[in-house]
Image (cartoon, rainbow over all chains, first blue to last red; front, top):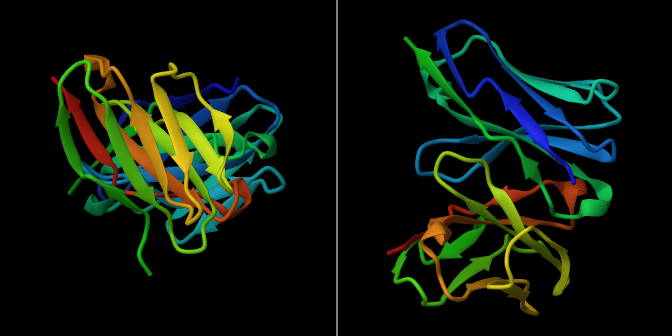
Length: 113
Length: 113
């Protein structure tokens, strides 16, 4: 089955700096890669996703890149703000796996003013 | 529009008991998935239902079961509770699979004592 590894487990950045989180996946059939942000005690919220027919996607300060050959994808947050502090999860799924999202272990991001 | 609603929000049960968790998807969504999130880890896939049929099952024991009703709401049942079942149980709804993305509810925090 699919296995998703996520690094780093914790990330501390100064406000205004950039943050990068990297994930690798094992199943070449995976073709959908969402990123979720989870604040303490709250539900995971989808912040951006990318499909395998696209190499990069941006939404304001957030961007995701995908390298299908190397089977890795990354989340980039620019101009970080204190409200970006949360746990970020990457996930992967394939068309034939229906609702099964395989999540990474998460990255605790702390943005210090 | 209401998002994904889950009930109850918190629950304390004793080892050996059973529990029923409930989920109402976003109006119009026909797919419901269940995930278990142990503290400090990423969500783990338990079940996925679409149009009242089970479409996927994760690596969980037979003590875990689920069903989806004609109105697309869903129940997750866990029998013979173990201490290790203590977790946040998340429900995610979708129009129908990864093409449309998944929206999570706020979860049910289950504590087994």
